Amino acid sequence: MRLNDLDERIVHALAEDARRSYADIGALVGLSAPAVKRRVDRLRDQGAITAFTVRVDPSALGWETEGFIEIFCSRNTSPEAIRKGLSRYPEIAAASTVTGEADAVVQVFAADMRHFEQVLERIASEPYVERTKSVLVLSPLVRRYAWGAPVD
Image (cartoon, rainbow, N blue to C red; front, side, top):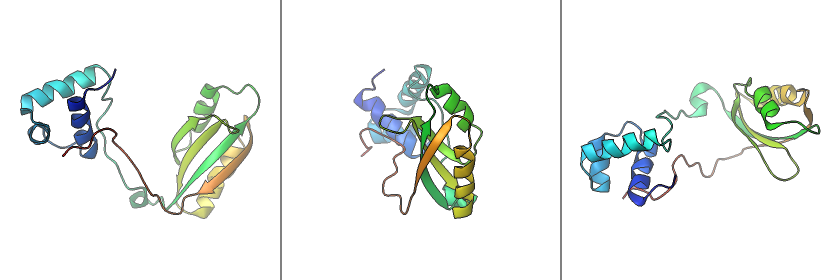
């Protein structure tokens, strides 16, 4: 499903603040509150909007260290096996299979360097992992939680 410009602006407004009222969004995009609600309900029914959530600064939870781990797997390891293995780690914020040399890339948040090292060691000891390569984040430069046309 491809969003039209108006739906995209509504989604963008909700992504910036999911608690924003339909009236407020309507004022931003030029619709009445009931019209915005109908569009949001339709977007939810069609699966374009999958959830309303909260974003928490990881440092507020004590996660001061961020890094990415490339995972190189043994031959014939399925994405499902990787997903199942990695889903046990609460420190993993995101994991994806990728093109290139690595089989997957994992975003990790940890309390400190020692904690990150422990997570890295645990991931490296998974039976399907042959080797890993990691990098630490010094400063996040861009983080997007919404895509599309910004609301004016």
